[in-house]
Image (tube, rainbow, N blue to C red; front, top):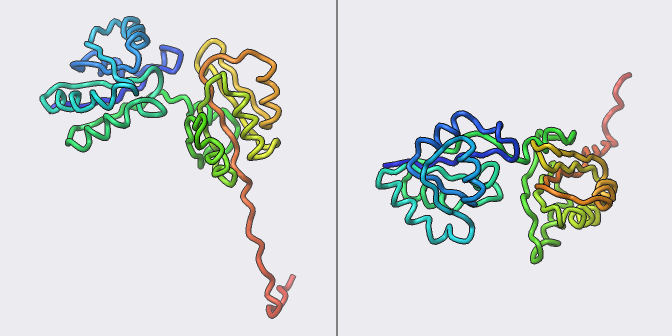
Length: 240
């Protein structure tokens, strides 16, 4: 039996790929890529000539069975997305689910994921957080936002540059204008930027400029309010 490797790729700076990832990509029988053109650039840069096939959200339902059968027959496969870790807001879940169901060994290598540096450098609590990924674009969007109104953990969202300001304003409407946020874009690239402030302040900032690149939005959760203890009228006052 072969094996399925999930291989993270750089989110921007090519130097962020690991030595183990490079070795794996060189040694597997074939590579599954979300976009063969983008992955082709990566492979060419590191002089990797492994066979590559397309695997994305439009064909993963049809190709997963065939891929699993090839692995069961003894081939090794590496799954990559355009950037970051496969299956994190990218294709991968269906293939992994099918592989696990068929008894295929699956191994995910550690590596780049955009929300981790965005969370850590946000200045917001990161001991507990929830990853929301992309909000629904239309149906279910307001319902999902309302469900997060009382979320106490730091929240993480992915967003396109074209919907950034709209999303920040919608978050402000539901969570309050003064809720603290941090928006990171172009992480690890030449024009990397992180803007911190209230939802209203950050929305106003990006409204005045042309926004490009991948976006990660970090939003603080509700403040924990300690429960008020009820006074027992029969208890004796404590000595000072």
